[in-house]
Picture 1: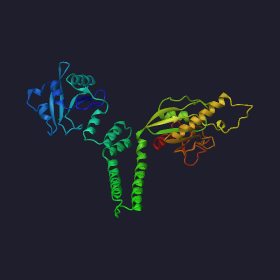
Picture 2 (picture 1 turned 30 degrees about the horizontal axis):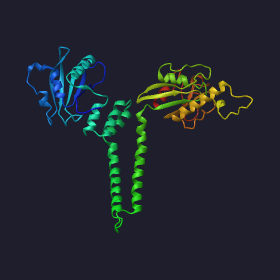
Picture 3 (picture 1 turned 45 degrees about the vertical axis):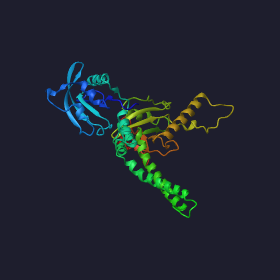
Picture 4 (picture 1 turned 90 degrees about the horizontal axis):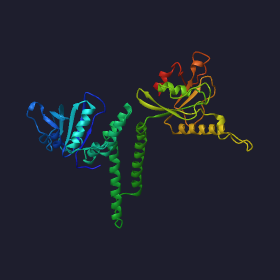
Length: 386
């Protein structure tokens, strides 16, 4: 990325809309706009781009007619002078009718007049380089753009507002003061002067470390929002996991069968919930008989099928270990608890209650959610819990 030149880009969402925005930023933004203007609206007098963009001038909006492919196109031009704009540079926003083709032609016209196409994130990068935005704020903007839920937007808002920076500043000042006192003690080591005792220094350093640990532990709650939370369905073969995956995804993502062991590898689907998207992963049923601890005599080496089963079990346990949440799925008529994965299950489901011996689910265990992916029983409750 280079600076000092003038960049241009479409700054609104792609696709037809009532209005689109094309943004110019850099020292030549005003002169480039002059080349794009067909005439002032109705020939009326108004501030010229150069006048409106004099350093320190207030932001103004002006109705203009742009020349695009020989045609006159009405638009609003928003002028921001150097030091008063988002990027800290002279900046023009052109609000035009929301036709993507018109926007692209306008960008091409600006490039012919001397601008260059902005790189991804370059407007925010210039805001950072000009001191209009700190690094944490820039990361907050990136997080807001990538947000998929209300919680992610809230985390991004806190990042942009400087909540993290404000919590770090006292700790940074404390460390700087401690460093100054230590250096002063070294400089006057031959004098009978004590700036800070060793126990007091240790106490203050430990206090800073503990504060940073608390801040880091709290930050993990927001780190999870940086990606779509991952849920893994674990259970014995034929517990109903694949049917559940299809029901939550709203499409046939997995092949289902009454025969156990249909799923041989992990299948992933994105599921839209009220508060955002999640990734739901269906792994192969965990067969206890495929455990690596099973003794196999030297005279009877493992068959290819046994080796495949063991590999499937290892893969399923790996997904369960790496997921954000584990969902244990048990067939309602299977009295065994869900297989162990080394992690506590966030949710425990009793599936196939449409096949239960009694109408209320019969063998439902404490804490389980009774569901049927075939007739939607319990699915509203499950989505809410997810």
